[in-house]
Image (cartoon, rainbow, N blue to C red; front, top):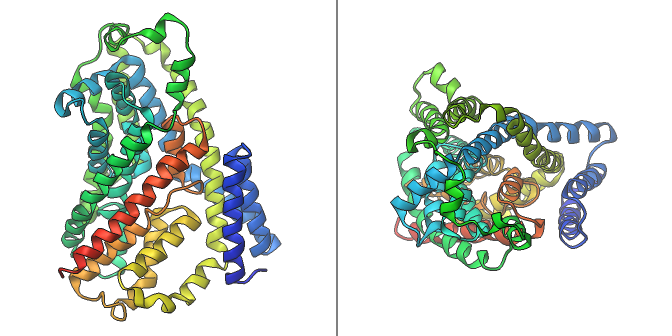
Amino acid sequence: MLSGGSFLIVFVIAIITMIIAIGALRIHPFLAIMATALILALLCLKLDQVVDTIATGFSSAFATIGLVVILGSLIGLILEHTGAALKMSEVVVKALGTSRPDAALAVMGWLTSISIFCDSGFVILNPVRKAIVKRVKVSSASTSVALATGLFISHCLIPPTPGPLAAAGVLGMENNLLPIMFFGVIVSIPALIVACVFASFIGKRVKDQTELLEAGQKDIASAQTYDELLASYGKTPGAFASFLPILLPLLLIGASSFCTMNHIQAPTVEFLGKPIIALFVGLLASLELLFSTKKTKELYSLTSNALTIAGPILFITGAGCALGKVVGASPLIPFLTEHSNALSAMGLFFPFVFASILKTAQGSSTVSISTTAAVVAPMLAPLGLDSPALTALTVIAIGAGAMTVSHVNDSYFWVVSKFGEFTKTIDVYKTLTLSTLLVGVTSILTAFVVSLFL
């Protein structure tokens, strides 16, 4: 088996080869990622561990986001099919105006992900995003990256999302979350600005599936105006009924997070706040839309379409989780931990770099945050980060690293890729991956500037 240092070199080569295989050679991501996972497993694990490690990683995708993606897909299709998504876009456009749809979606995502996983948040809010694209005639690619990045920023920086909350506990700040939340908000502002500017820039340079389909259509439907599209639904649901399937899951998950953060024992609230249960409640609310629009007979076909949409996402995500599991069982993590003292002079940048390496290597932001916090905890004094304010800022630095970067071994990458309707995996690299790099770097630089005043 390879040593930690040798595996690091092989890992870098393997990831570059995988990216080339997917982007340039057009090999299906599922095959490319699974092949990479298998090759790395054979190089670093015992033969009797290879199959179990890959199988455990693959199945974890279905255990963590499987039902979330399926339920979210079905809710989204119902919202679209009944005209509820268009009604929600009307409300958003009237409230925020048509001049800054990217900024509106980024802020909407940022607020949402404070209490909900970014994967679930993108699935839940995607129908609103798509409706706004039709309403305002803005780039679907730009709105996808704006919404995705807005969700990702608060997911990594602001408790009570699990990653920052876990880091706070490991670093002894579990009863002092207010400064972490304060710094998280402060650091988020420049990151959100960068995300919006980049989304507007890249949206003009990347063609998404919707644009390509519209460009190739020759029939009358392709020439529909927004008003004609709205009229084609007949009577649309009211604003409250349209928003309810989205608001209910958010409120339930938010209430559960609030109870957890404040150590309130509320088993029923915690149960209802689990993403799977919360989305199921949202699905029940969405069924009323089918009743009110007299489309209940179409529930069967909508469910079949939802499963068709969710399938590719889950299988590719499973391959990415398998790769992450292999890396987690490899000598890479112990190697990085053993040599962490060599980087201790970096101060606040050390947790950022360490977290970014773990994030890029194994895909999960939450795992990256919690692992980095455990490594950094005994090093706070040598790093000069042991004051309460600087320890809180350390949590933010770790979160900034856990944003850098999202690529093929991250389930969020595939959720955004499929629900955002990108036609090429390389385009997701150009948008989401590059955006997470920019906001991650922006966040650590902002955190460093803040630290100068502490």
